[in-house]
Image 1: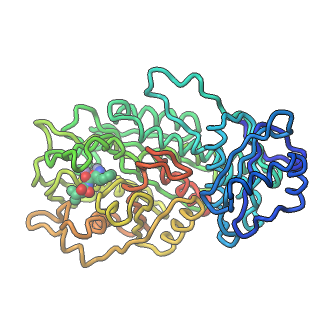
Image 2: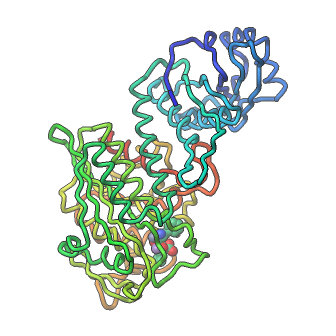
Length: 491
Ligand code: BES
Ligand code: MN
Ligand code: ZN
């Protein structure tokens, strides 16, 4: 799909469909739109009256003008109130337009949406994302791809200027989001620890990143007893992936991104039932998927910060070699852990990954993990929980999330709840009481960080959507690739 910003005035644009955004509090036609209306034989005005289109958000209309007209179809999208205009409004508006254009089998589309905060580059970039992300369709596992499907071929963004660079950047960002979506959506017999490592290798190669993959033996030498405890029942070998992006000049800052990478979480001997969604647990590498997605984007955008991408990849399985509930593991920082629940495995794999990240001497660490059902209960499907030991870092992540249109909500690292993780026999247990389960999970992780500013995102809700939400289709979302990229770029 060719997306570009064009200087062509609205009145001169020709193509299959022209999409116009309207605010509910300024529905009267501007001078330009009055001229357009005349050009379209007063179809525009009639359409608005006939369909009682009021410009409210989620209020949309498509109509055919007829052949011979400079535009064959008109798409109207409601943007809500003028004062509520943000980048999210245009991103969602563009997504609605893209979906309607696809349904209407449009090949060439013109989009006319308002510029947000006089920032044409950001507006064009939000529109680009809004067009690309909902149109991504995953047919990899269908035996016959939909051959009859007509594709949107050309999109022209009107009234913002050319902004080639902003569009390219947005397209690169989307390619990272789509990579993460495809990794999460692929089943556990397709994305395994072995194939995940192969994909990481390809990404590193394609974008000039350094990569090191530690095998079981090397992890043993580093004392990663917590990660390897989780991995021990699987027939597939664990892979500890470390990708490094180094800018050409000496970096001002070094960052680490750590993603929970369970290619499948059966729960282990504390086996999940269908009640706890065992059939959805291919998504348990959502953190790792976003980590690779971010690596793919950062490798192309080349900011002047050094970034380490870390994924401790394995499956949580059952077999004669499986961890017993009650087993005691020793992590690579020497801490002993009583595994009172084998289904709290993500934090065990992350424990060793966080220790590894801190040893790199980075300035900040962010981890992303589909860590707890408790976080989904607390914040629902659309919002990720954020915990941090550092206010500056927390603020950066919140800002990056807002720019990305990915929702994060800060939660407390309530030290008092650490009581719940005390073990009579080892240093700590891996699970506490049911109440506050997402908080104790974060407190558990904190045990594996000494002093580096650290933030934890529990993304168990937003990595997957049961229902389409405008920009994202149902299924894997690619959350929070965009937040990570904005965080790195805005250092
Ligand atoms: N991978 C799950 C968390 C999860 C739940 C992700 C729902 C996505 C959707 C995690 O490993 C897990 O099993 N957590 C347990 C922790 C409990 C045993 C303390 C949970 O949330 O039930
Ligand atoms: Mn689990
Ligand atoms: Zn899990």
